Length: 363
Image 1 (cartoon, one colour):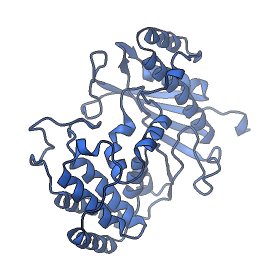
Image 2 (image 1 turned 90 degrees about the vertical axis):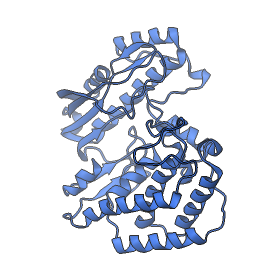
Image 3 (image 1 turned 90 degrees about the horizontal axis):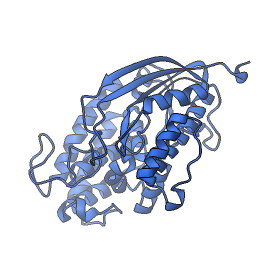
Image 4 (image 1 turned 120 degrees about the vertical axis):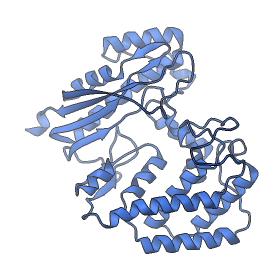
């Protein structure tokens, strides 16, 4: 949505806890000089061809996901890109490399979370090979993304854009990151928040994050801890459930706690943290501003968790009115794979439109 916003000439603020997601967003909405991009590609090819073996960065279980020769090739390519000066061109090249790092892995391409692929399973249009052509895949990805970026060159002037932090519960002022985003400065928020324990968001990007040096294995755990909807909590946190203020949610948490305290902790913390996100959204939206949220219900310990209903309740008590509710069938299954007998494929999603009510700050 940030891309569509700037193409329309409007100001786009964006935020994501995942550093790879932030890098991809920036690359998609930033104009770069195509001549500079092509020159950088040529320099990288020369360095890659001449490069000697260099040590790879810290990647989770690198020996599990990559063959030795693939690891060497990726490390050489990474080193060739590192030699480029920092800037928008390099940022785009790193995003292209991140996709290649995932494509070259032994992960099953049908799933977002890394799972070792079985023999004979490959991405569409890709040959089955233990040591893929790293440079060939990088060149192919470069050509595709260069074509996409070239379309920005002929567009009307792009609207201003800026990252407003890595936490939807505490949006930051892009001009002064140490300060919060000013109140009542946004007209529209569009978001698709995480599901409660239905997807391992940071782990899904772990291979690319590691190759880009965005986080070590230890830092990856810290990233996961910051994520809303995360699946793991310390034993000390289990059983520490307070009232959410939503009777149906509290009853759900108690039922789940009887079966699995960890999953109950997931649900409780998800609702608490999503409430904080609603409060922050209400703070930064102008009077009458809209919040568009796309969510889906999922199954936890065999029980239907009605995310859409709980989100509406949280919105109402955070200063919003429900203006529109649409239900859509999910046709793709890339992010919605059932992992065990108590989970289920998510088949529908809700598009909820909320409007911020006037409050004392508007007087």
